[in-house]
Length: 469
Image (cartoon, rainbow, N blue to C red; front, side, top):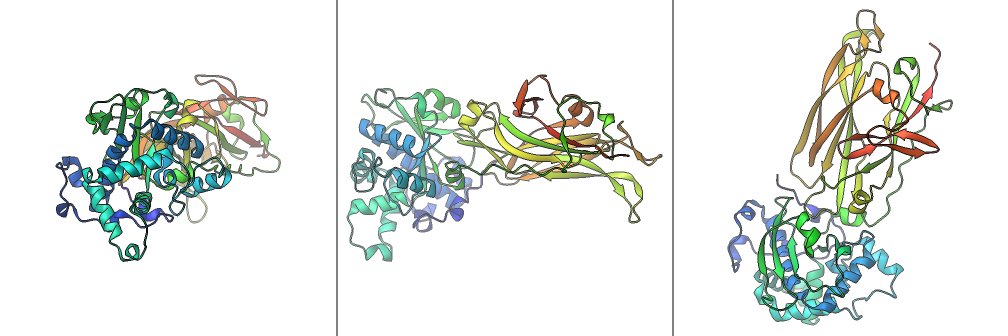
């Protein structure tokens, strides 16, 4: 499924962009035919791909300079808490188009980071190489010409090098180095692969291989590059600036725990679910979650965005307040949870304080947990599953046994459905604490039982309020 890249409409801090002024496909002669897969892209996305593709090739040639490699690595470590990406605008020292998170970092460590006027071997190598070789990259060359011909640019008397800085910085490009920590640029003498985000798919792309020991300085084609490839081969990915880039470099606020009843007590023991009646209040939350494998991450992805839904049932009530002979299905959508690669690698618990169910009634004999991952995809993902109901429609009273079921359908925009799991009230309350398949998570001295939905692990914290029948 093709990803929908409308990021630039959401980026407020970018300067003038190449894409609004480029010539259409048919008016731009490229040195090689477009791959068939790019021919289905809309014009604006095709322009993004061509820009990133040519810049990735230009980058590969520049990276043959050792000082440029060392400087790039240093900037990534300085600006990115996750240690694997930096914007081109920041590498060029252009404050007008730097992402807010990197601009904030610059203001904190101004004395240790080269500014636009300071020494920066990467920037100098990129600019010098571009001035010498830009004619080998027809899309970038035409884009620069169009950029310089704009009326507002024609009035400014600046050097070609300054024009090139502003032009490159305005493109909204990011250099992403997956697994940067595995390579030491001071001593590394192997080859470098560059690639780019192809937009139209998210599992692999072509790449370009550059030797650091001589040979073909223009690089050779690598037909298949994916995340597994980048684990063992130094790979630089040219991608596009979007809101996730800025968000992942800032610390999000910790969600507040919903407020239970004043006389609620924490359920710190396993219990037979029949002992908690329909009249009682069982306030169920999920304090923390963790993701245990990287299977859900996309092509060279920096983060995994998880979306959870709860599916439940409710007994139908007539207009006069009497119970009808049937049940309805309800679904509840929770806030997006984001995991960095380090979060996953270290299996780091993240505080989410999800209110799973403010009152898990006996009638909700089982509930469903649906897990989706959000991507820049066009369209929706759907999932179907059933939940069980505990209600005796003859006696008109809740019952601990399942008496009926209802089917649920969940839709999530720009997502992929991954997995769902059915959670029976009986089983959840029978394993509040103590280890089973996934061990325990100790919180406030209580060893909570860890459960899972797919690769996402979590545990319940229940607060019980005893209400006299």
